[in-house]
Length: 97
Image (cartoon, rainbow, N blue to C red; front, side, top):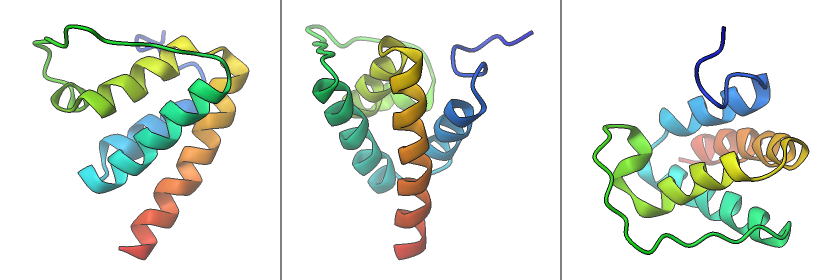
């Protein structure tokens, strides 16, 4: 049984895992991409009071947090497409570093 929201799609799971294991610079670029693609797909989110006490990797940076929240929000097809692109982007950025 899958416990996490991203475990149901192997591409989404790979993208989230890749981000988690990346540097903040790579996470920043990928997060910008996720947020932009989500906005371009018609999804808009604002966080007015950012106070979270979890200890997840994305909770330490508002941009990373928003990117993960957008991935939860978008429809499954859009999520899969974005994550497929993110996997390639993370790989490319890591090779360039």
